[in-house]
Length: 207
Image (cartoon, rainbow, N blue to C red; front, side):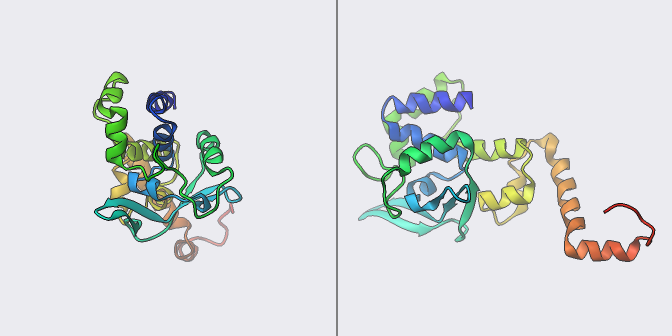
C-alpha cells in the first residue's frame, strides 16, 4: 500500500482523477476499460461490493461501451483503503453518472493516463520500470492471493474463465496450496460429502 499510495500521489499531482484511476484499478483488480466503465450505481455500500458490469473504450465516433471481457458481471469486495476514494467519487451524484471522469469531463483511458502523467518516468522513479496500467490489475490480484483469498473466489473476482489463468497470479511457491484448496473445496461440496459418507464408518467422530 505504501508504494501504491506513492504512485497514486505522483499521478494526483497532475490531476486527482489519475490518482483515483490508479487506486480503482489496483484495489478492484480491474482492467483500465472497466475502470472507465464504472458508474456510481455500481457501488453497493450495503453489500460492500463494486459490481463491474461494462467496459468503455475510445472509438472513432466517441466512447464505445461493451460488456466485460467474460460477458458476465463481476462483484469485487470494497477494500478499506479504497472506501474513502469511492465515497468521494459517489458523493452527490446520480446512479447512472460515470464514477470517474478526467480533467475535461471525459472517460479516462490507459493511453491518456500514460501520456498525461508521464507514467514511464513516474514508475521508473519508484523502482518499478516495468509496471504498466494493466499491471495494476495484476498487482491487485496478486495481493488478494497473498492475503489468502481462495482460488475459486479470486477467479470470480477477476472474471477468468479458466482456473489456470487465475493460478498464474499466485506466487510459484504457493501454487501447491491452491491445489490443496481446490481438493478441499471439492471434498466439501455436496457431491463430495455424499461420496465420503459412503466410505466412512458410522463411528467416525467430528462434524
